[in-house]
Each structure stands twice: as C-alpha cells, then as structure tokens.
Amino acid sequence: MVDANRPLSATYTYQGERRTLDDFLTRTKTNGFLVLRGQKIVHERYTDANRNTRFQSWSMAKSFTSAALGVALREGHIRSLDEPVTKYLPELRKSGYNNVSIRHLLWMSSGTDWDEREDVPRMQIAANQGQSLTRMAARQQPDWTPGSQFEYNSMNSYVLARVITEATGTPYHRYVEKKIWQPAGMAGAAQISSDGKGESLGYCCFQATDRDYARFGLLYLRQGKAHGKQVVPASWVKSSTSPSGVNPKYGLHWWLGGERDFMAAGFGGQYIYVSPEHDVVIVKSTTSTGAHDQEEVLAAFRAVAAKVS
Image 1 (cartoon, rainbow, N blue to C red):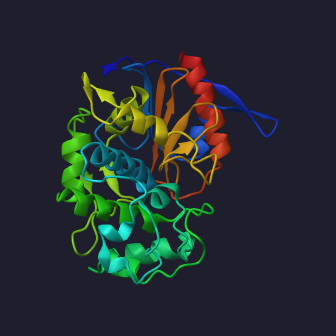
Image 2 (tube, rainbow, N blue to C red; image 1 turned 30 degrees about the horizontal axis):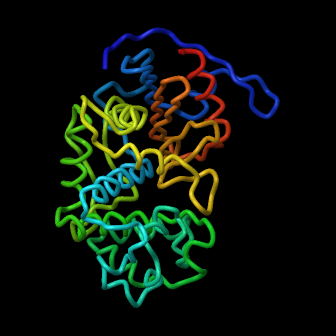
C-alpha cells in the first residue's frame, strides 16, 4: 500500500437528514479511519492513536475465521460444509450441537439456546478465569431446528475455530497466521486471544493495526488474491459474501450491504468495509463500546466510497 493522504469530506442522507462524515466519526468516537482505493491509501486519520496502534477487532475476527475455514476446505482438511460438527468435536455429541453442521455455524443457524447479550459476557468471564469454552459449548441445549432461522451466536464462531484446529491438526492461531496473515502481507504479527485452556476464541479479539485490517479487506476485494497468490479461494470469497440460506443480510460470517458491498463488523463500531463497485476498502476503529446503527454506517461508508472513486 502506498501512503498518499489527503483531506476528505463527505455527506450522506440518513433518515431524511443530511449528515457529514466528520460529525459521524466524532459521534461514533472513532479513533482510526482509513480509506483504501485500489492499493493506495487515500485517507488516514487517528485520534488518540496512530498508524501503529493495535485496535481490538471484537467480532470482525469472525470474518477471519471464515477465511481460515475456506482455506481448510480447499486443502481437504474438511470435506464438506455439511459435515457434522461432532465429527471433529465428539465431546459435543450430548449438547445442542449434536445435529449441527459446519454450514449451520457459518450461517449463524445452529439452533442452540443462546442470548448474545447475556452469554457473551459469560464467555469472556470464563475465558479470563482460565476455563475452557468447549465445556461451555458442551452445556448448550437445542432450542430450534438447525438451519431453519438466523440467530447471531458467538459460540458458533468459537466452535468453528475449534473445528479448524481439530481438522487441520494445527492450532487455530497458527493456522490463521500461516494461511491468512502472512500470505496477505500483514506488517505486524498476528495477536489472537485464547480461552483459559489456550484455545483461540475465533469469535473475537484479534489485535491489529488499521493498515493490517485494510490488507484483509483488500484480500477480499481482490477475490482472495494477494501478491499474485490465491490465498483464499475465489469461490469461497463469493460464497462468503453472498446471502446465506437464512438471512439475506448475512453471508458466511460477513455482513452484506445489499449493493454488492459487504463488511466485517465488531462490537462498539469496528468495521472493515469492502465496496467492489468503487474498488474501495474502509476501516473504522474505536475504543468505544457504544452501539451504532448499521444502516447509517453503510450510508456513510457508501458516500465515502463514491467520493474517492
């Protein structure tokens, strides 16, 4: 990426009101904002941070987990997305994951009894106290038929990371570093959090700079290619960024904008936005924990993408 910074102003309409990019970034307590067109940085700004600051990914990590799963599928470690999770994690046979496939996990359609707002904090506490999240997964009960509807569930992504570890014989964090991080040309080392037993979380908690997050977005903008190498299968990129069977706004651990654009999204306002139409990647990072309206985020990002094109 070539560093070519320039001032950037943009306006967008949301709920009938004309709004500015500067106001949006201030209201959402943005600490890092980077715009990439092609392979060139056209705008980069930081508040109480700099280009070397490592930002918490939160749930943007789920999109990295999806990428790693796609590589494991290509390499033959996993034969089909319709394989049962318990093929790789037999300890989940007595849980709500017993009749769940890998595809169901990717779709966020496992059918286990889950409340994201209440259960994710419990996951974090368990991990911080040295507990295994696999034991927590083994206690999950079935609630509805897998594959019949959408329910966002971070435990699904943790289980996916465990599947990757068991299928490849390589710890998740090392597999991601070897198969995604290094081939994509990330400048910094991968920092991926784990639970109390050393199992990578998969659903959250990468730490990386905005520039490295942008490199991941660029990888998907280029249909999985980086530096002349097919890092992630192009077919996987297409599948991941197409509507799943249960939610038109969600693919395989990627959020879909509906205009061929898509993004990785994390708690508090972390985003990697990709617009193939405009050949643009946008990264937004924050240390805030406030909620944001994803439709307004899309409106702002689309205005920026159009402005720099």
